Amino acid sequence: MTLKLLENSLVSLCSGSSNEDVMGERGSSISGEVGIEPAIAGNCKATHSLERRVYKAVTDGNPSSCYNLDGSVESDAKPPLIRCESSMKVHISRDNDPYSSSFPNSWDGFELPVNSDDDENSSRCAHPCTTTIKASKPHLGEHRYRKHSTSRCWKVDLGDAKHSELSKSDLHLKPAFRSRKNSYTRQRTRRISFKRKLFNGYSVTASHKGLNRAGVLNLFKKKEILEGSNSAALHGVNRIRSNIAEQLSSHTPEDFHVKLSIKSFMVPELFIEIPETATVGSLKRTVMEAITAIIGSGLHVGVLLQGKNVRDDDRTLIQAGISHANELDELSFTLEPNSGFSPSRCSNTGKPYFVLPCDSTEPLTRLQAGPSLDQGKNDSSAYHALTSTIICHESNRNSVHSLLDAPLVDKIASSQALLANPATSVEALSVVPADKPRRSELVQRRIRRPFTVSEVEALVMAVEKLGTGRWRDVKIQSFDNAIHRTYVDLKDKWKTLVHTARISPQHRRGEPVPQELLDRVLLAHSYWSQRQAKLQAKTSSISSPEACLGLLSEVTIN
DNA sequence: TTTAGGG
DNA sequence: CCCTAAA
Image (cartoon, rainbow, N blue to C red):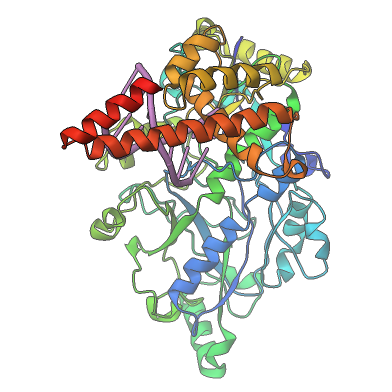
């Protein structure tokens, strides 16, 4: 079965509170939203503090606690998924910015549970999926934020075909189980991008910087009237300026805050390979794990003002030109991977590694063809990074390509069918976010198959006979039929057996191994270790004929 | 490809 | 189990 999860079919990845209100109309692609509103004193906070705040806002959204509590997902399993950088948009406004609570119809559907919560909403940690970002009092934006705080779950929209005219190049499928020993599926592309949300009344029109800076979603700066009245928005620039001047003359600098609200960001493209027999819960956890890995991998936040990288971290915001008084200037943030890229690439060229235009109203297909992609890298990564789909297909390579041809409705139907038929067997799951086809591509992790006692017995027997350095022989002799046990597995198992044998029985986990076997493990291990040490000592001093003779005699004895 | 070890 | 340098 091959299927593709697309827009609009709803998959709630985390049970929790009511999400319908915020998810109902969401459209295509996978994106997330982070609602934060950190108040930053424009005159005293350095720009690097701004970066830190943005970073914190993102990393605090790490839902690891969620999926940990959800169970069965290893907490330390955080593959280095971050490769792409992303950007986010920021609105700048005054404290009394009258946010609207409306949502655009075209909002794309991956809701990240990063909530800005107001003061009285102290129950934000009640749900494991709820992440908190300490925000300034969102007075006027409470409606909106509360709406968000009810959305505590990850969601994947699967759905409406009309939003996704997927070209074949949108689909990056690789056959699984390519080889006998390495039955893995590799992943290539991934994307992080951000999506913008509009505000009624203040609909922050995209002062689109254009696509000259590949990789950064524009930040929209929202200029507000200092008087705080909505009607002020109707006044001209002159009026605004005069208001600002007025404020400047009558207020201490501490009165001016730059309010940043990061509206959304997108989750990179994810590929999910999941057997039909997997449960829905497995699917949820898998997606959760992937997202967590992305967010948890660490990001570097860069600040761009009018397209220029603000590198001086010690400058204050106001010195850098980021203040409430600014008008149509653009403020952008870039999220870059902390590792995996040479920082010079960004800092030298001043060009972010990966930029997306932020105007979410733009069709995805156009984004793909956008000039930003021509900027420097015409490799498929940038291209792929702009796609936003979740692809599910089973490990059967024969069925993979049917996805390309089947009518989209059928694919959707398949995906729904998958959701409707949770099976009991949890098989291997994998989610691999798309990324630049660079190194360290992720591979599906094999399912865990604990050694049985009889397997341990066979292993011990083989090692007793062959030693600890001939795992291929051990494999051939005792596990030739166990195709899922590689010689590396056997070696690893021996390692853990030795460890198990050395620790107290109280600390052992899993199916208990008979003490008799563990004793043999220790015995064989010490024997072969000593033997190897002796051999090494001999070979290192074999220059002398005497040593050579001694070695030969000993080997003969053995 | 295997081995050996760290993650 | 994964990843990978080294052999």
